[in-house]
Image: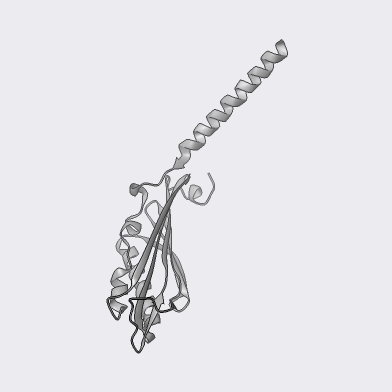
Length: 183
């Protein structure tokens, strides 16, 4: 009989320890909300740049967004994929204008640019820190796409698409050790 009581005591103790560990872990989970998206993520759209390079009013765009809850931070992602007709020689200028626009908007919102890589021909990435958020803007290279119905492509123009993706982590704590995966 004594062995049964000891076994039940151990079983209850293990269950309590597990419940406490689960509750502590759950408390550290950060759920995505509008309040933990940076001002840049909420407001950035490349439409003003795209409009300058479009040769006609036709085109299409796709938007995608997702959010996630993690231990110590929330994740946010926004993706923009336009298809448009541009002058054949404007690819590099369009990409450079996108890069300049992203840089200037980040700086205008007091973001710290932590690093940049790539170029206008092959696509680029910009890493930034803005408040409690760390993010990356990745712009894939422009490439031609087959003619889409409703989009007229005249002489000297091409139908192209590219992708702008913003991924961000919003940290509950601004402690750099937490951000680097050490607690």
